[in-house]
Length: 461
Image 1: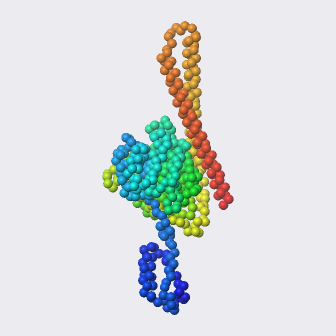
Image 2: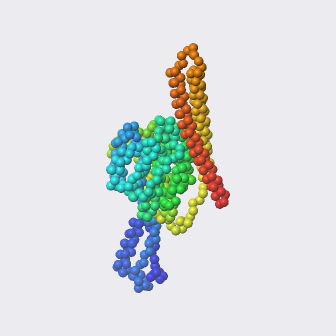
Image 3: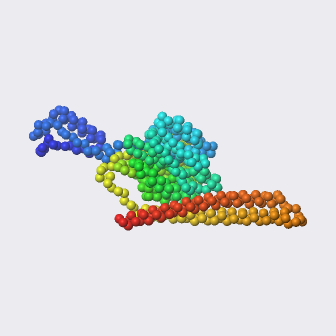
């Protein structure tokens, strides 16, 4: 028997399709005037309680990330692949496309012209000698942009690697979608080249630290933070753990409710005809070095609905988009329940170990830079001494009276030219490594202070 049915409320917390079915049924019963016993009110009052799924439907974003390997005249089938990338972006209709290694501005303008209907806002980040290669295409209006170039980025004399000339950076665009402020970052860190003897590990750790710090200090006014790019680090490497732990970013692959493509999310695959097989010799299943990371800063929450990677060739042609696989992620942004808004993130003690490990790698790089600085300084001093000796010999030949043998002018001039070149080169390298030492020292100091602050917070509870 129903007690006081006039105040009856039917509360539904069912999936949307089932809920609609019951609402239609209740509406039908009410329109028929189906009586409820002991009451003259034949209407059922229905109150709908929003479920977690309803909240997640606030906003949904599709994001595309790819290292395009777009070196003109050097990358294989570069023009054909850029066309294919433009085709997939125009057909799929992502909200954001984060691209790296678009080294030629002509390629960027070609993509911009092709994609202007679907992605009316875009930006190309310029830095270094040949450019950063970073660009973003957005379906939503870009409100602001900023570029930060990393303090260390390889060595100018390593011509075969070329990272120094690219001016590796992180680009930022600010979007506002349905009242939600997004800070979207795209980056490309220094390549690894040799995992066993990684001469650039300290540089990548510094870049990861600067990236995390840059995100921390520029995202305070944002609701949601998105980061995509080629980090050139395995998921278990200290740089990635630093971004997840210190910057508080979540890995979309780990958080995804559904994974499509490679089961382990690899973006360098042996099946890709452009990927270096030597690089994957110890990793037959592939390597994951391309990431989409995210976090929330305010009263919103983000869920990763799906994480998808390409698996070799494109659907239309038997060639891959790049030597990397593309990463495609679908995110749902929703407002947090009121009780969750008051919760503050807890500090994990493991973060202390991550910071200590990162600081140790920076210290190893610092000792190496100091040795190179000393070697270049010593070489410059030797070149100066050689020039002084040659000057003394020249003066003695001019004022020392008659010589029994003719003075070797050609050999003397050639040796003087060589000494000048060595002096200039060694002085330039000494100054370069001095800057490197200062950057590494500064980064170590920052990490030491952050570590001390972190330990104080943990000890204070």
